[in-house]
Length: 479
Image 1 (spheres, rainbow, N blue to C red):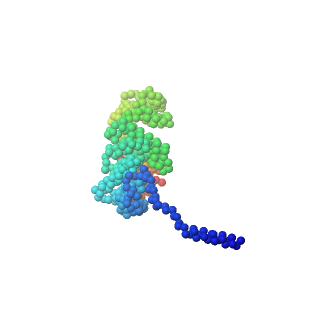
Image 2: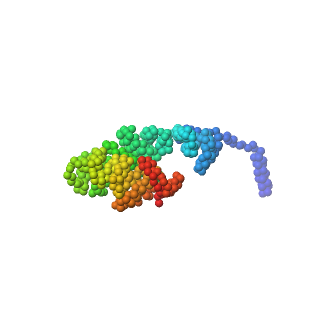
Image 3: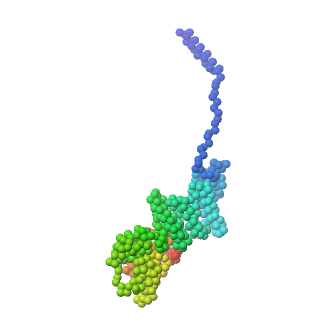
């Protein structure tokens, strides 16, 4: 038994020696470089970090300048931005940071510069960046073009004419349709209306684009989510109201448009003579035939509630009223002017004068002329509050005309509107209920304390409201 064990151990020992002396066979694995990252077809064709020759340096400049921009330390950010822009204008190839941050930096330089030539050069730099961004990120070209137009309209209007700025917006609208950038809609609307009223673009073109604007707003409001809805609410409060000025062009909108828009006012107030006159007049202005069912119903309601028997069918008063109801506004004004010239009763003169003011306001939307006649009426009848009620309404409805429809530039019109309504009720107790109604409705829309403070203004100070209004008022904050 021991002999077998010794032999077994000896065998194992000999096997170990054999194995120990056998050369080891090692599998040689060739070093293979890792495959290059797949080329993304959506990357910008312009210079990117990984193409810069020194990606770490380029990305470091990028990170540093962006942190400084967030801190509004633009002066220190500028040289780092220039470095990042030079090394990799397209950044990572997916984001346009360098172009849009460059716009921000040059706007800062423009704001602190006093030399006019340098200021002009900074604006050129801004627009160059938009052009370069369009080449590096062509899918966003429409947005960059829209931003050019936006800046020309709001920030640098001296660098362009209204027709040229409008042309930029029109080109964006042509390529994007109802997907046009939301921020161009208000200035596009403003330039469209202005040029149409000045007869610098055809009614056919204006009708096409006002329709596209309305469709875009409807889509934007329906599809918006979160904070984006706030922007669409601003647009919705401005553009449709501004487009109403096109109603002053006879034949621009048809009968169906006016029935859809105004007939509901009559149904809600079927015995109100002012509304009956206005709605009938608007439908006639829109070309509705006298046998149209809506006009027949309106005429019957007017006969029942408002018509008075005139002994002289051809008197200027009757002719003026008939012209107004038939949508012949210039004729109506001419007849009322004749009445005023021949009338000896001061109160009647004041009434006809105020009627002209209403025609200019409601139907022709010529606010300055409406104020002129309202003030004439107030002078004829000094303790009459109604002229000031109308002037207040003129001012309050000028937000879209004098600003973007919201924000400080549009809200300041409320200051002068409140002045007029307060004057109306101080002069005429009969005007107080309506004046108070308007004051309660609009006081909430005055600028807030922050907007007043950041503009270096103080509550209680004097401020001259610009635009067509050109009136001094007292600075007040919404409560």
